[in-house]
Structures are given as structure tokens and as C-alpha cells.
Image 1 (cartoon, rainbow, N blue to C red):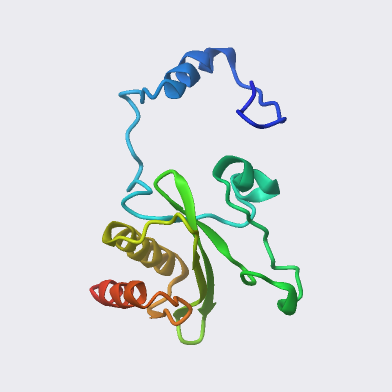
Image 2: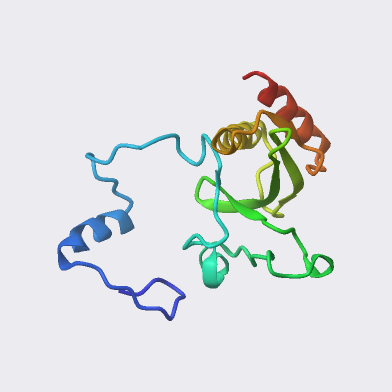
Amino acid sequence: MRVEDSKDSYLYLNSDQPHLSGLEAGRIPKKWKPAGPSTEEEVTFLAPLEIVSARGRSKKVFDFEYLWEVYKPAHLRRWGYYTLPILYGDDLVARLDPKLDRKTNTLHVLGFWLEDDAPKDEAFAGALAKGLRRFADMTDARRFDLSGIKQTKLRSYLKKELKKD
């Protein structure tokens, strides 16, 4: 099997062909139930070595240039030490450079960058707030420092939403 605009080949089970054809045609099997919120309801932060973001796949699939900069000297980094791509709906729309201070249980947003075509509405802001809350829960963070989010309206909205819990 080939993926459009990719030179890579992929293997699949013959028994999966009807499912793949159905998905390609836009049909979702009735038995499939979401395991949690959709990426439109809550953004997902992708790990640097996640299959979508690794090895240039994000550029091929999402036109999202991503490079894990953890091994680059600080002065050569464009985004940040541990920047994560942000999936919203079916698109990579932003990047987040988080850092957890374990002494104060504070999740610091060191940097946040929106792609040019990223949504800038309240639905996205709400989904981002939910994604940040889940990320904070996963890391046992109890506080947020959102100073790395330069978009003033978005930062204010997130502060308000994240205080609700």
C-alpha cells in the first residue's frame, strides 16, 4: 500500500482491505467508539518521537515542519528544548515548549507558536485549555505559568479556564 505523495511502502493484512477502503471513502465503522474526547474537543500534544512527528512525516502529511531540538545547543534552537506539536482536529496547528518544575509542581509554558493557518477562535482556546489540563494532570502539575504564550487574549482565556479546576 502507498500513501499519497510518499515514497514509503506500507504493509497491511488482506483482511483489513475492506476497512481501509471504507475509511478512505469517509465511512467510520459503527462499532468504533471514541476512547475519549476528540482532538476538536481537546488538543493532543504529540511526543517528539511519535510516529507522526518523527522522520519528517509531519511535513509530508500535515505540511508542518518539525525537528526535535533537544540535542541542539540552546543558541541554535528555533523553537525550544522539548517542543511538542499540537494536534487540533485533523491538523497540526501549533507548538508548545513545556517544562515542569517539580519543586513547585508548576507547568511552565516556555514557548507557544501558532502556525499561520491555525484557528484563533474560542473553540480552539477551549480545546487547548483542556489539553493543558490533561497534560498537567499527567505530570502532577498543580500550577501554570503561561508567560511563554505571547498571544495576550489566548493567555488570558487560558488563565481563566485553568483556574476553574
